[in-house]
Length: 140
Image 1: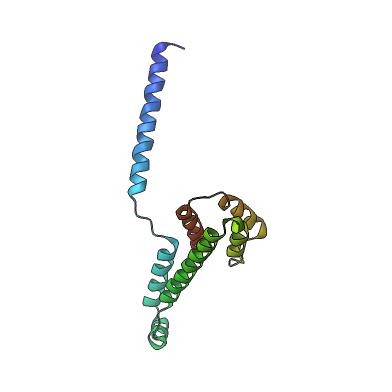
Image 2 (image 1 turned 90 degrees about the vertical axis):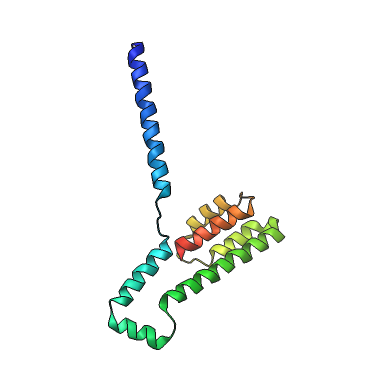
């Protein structure tokens, strides 16, 4: 291969890397709604366009979307509780993780084993909390 071709190929690769970097920066600046925010928006749109549901909302006195928020807060408390347990007794981390995952019946036992394997070696409590919170939001 000629030297000129190699230089041309290297320049093309550098341009591609530059474009990929620009795309990555652009995508990182996009605001993407979380699953719960998207569901809340959908629920609000449905309620706003349906008079029967509006009446139910008014008579109930408590909005449906606030119940979802309360459930998320309860599950976040659950995460914090298990993090505290793991910090108190790190030797029982796998037991606590398994106990935590039992709160999600939609996760199969094989998937629970995989999740436990991915979480058991995490030493940083903030990263562990983040991963557990992510599970809560995914399987809510």
